[in-house]
Image 1: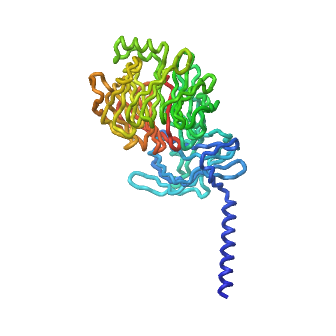
Image 2 (image 1 turned 180 degrees about the horizontal axis):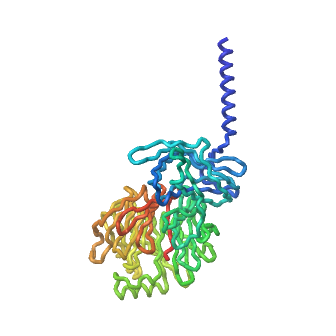
Image 3 (image 1 turned 30 degrees about the horizontal axis):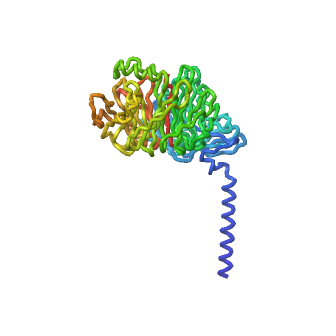
Length: 529
């Protein structure tokens, strides 16, 4: 008898388990599962949803967004986000929040569904609960998801129209139309974990587009040609360079890297008024690929040191005009050198040196390589042509290496390297600022920008010099890279740990805005004109 009861319980449990499994399989919300990760295929695209806060508001409303779902034209709902997000109308004023991004099957989508919880309104010194509509919140949309492309939705929250009769919370989210953007106002940020590029309007401080590129995008650079502006994105996971047309924010071509593996850093050099060259460091093969942007083909493979992670090139020679830091003789020496050659500087992390690639301008080919030892773990660099210096950030050591370009031009490799000591460790980026007579160092830990004085010839013949720190600016979590705007007023910092970009005012030395981007952001670029 006991055995029969046990068997009956097992059968009953099995029946309910199968019924539960069937119910879950037939639920109207399709869990994305493996599609939560960026997926590549002609039949899948990517959707990114942002909420833009009000320009101003008279109401202080807080609510919890529990989930966002999207409905296809066949009535199937798919989950966009399910991580609870606290939203407050006052703190959202003038800000933007990334709701989520997901890979979706190709097709048309007609509705967004918002699941809300715990709506509160603050009036003077009291806080009251707001009722929520039992049917939930739906927003009508009409978008097409295309294969291997990103579709970005921007919602505008009208806070003052979101309460009914003073007790019912029914948020009004309007789909914001796209406005043509000037490429000179745009910033491009690679998101390695999202396989896309966030496009930011630096005037409004908001993301205005998202571009799906290759796998694991890292380095990014822009062309210097005003007549044919392009954005070049290094895809480390798919061994290619995506070419973005900035007026449409679409990928017009993907250039395969045939002679290298795990591409990482990128720089664009103007070698004449009509010709540019693209340099790509290949970390996995210890090489540099040279690409002709006109033919969009790899034209040369150059052997570098071990673990090339970053590359910087000398700017147009016209930038020497009006320099306050070089003698007339030094300027003429550099101008004479640049009539025939241009230098590209490659940071080799594992071999602890910098490869100086001397490129023949007339042929557009490598003339010579000079390897300069910096002794530490170099990870990033910047060229200060006004002083004829290259500053190299060393991640695990508290020294900043300084390469003298004039000594390199003269062939004096031995006396070409000096150092600024006691700058701290975990430096991931360096920017020189001749106008303000400063150097900005980006520190991964504790997440800040350090400001120091540049290397000066007044240090005499010292190989090492300690320069006083002028200040620090806190930014986001685990900053990876940064850039200065062409006007020299602001710094834009990519915070890899907090999936955001910090906007820093150089004058006040404060973070004035935080812009949400994709997952694991890495590189940043903007047009220099």
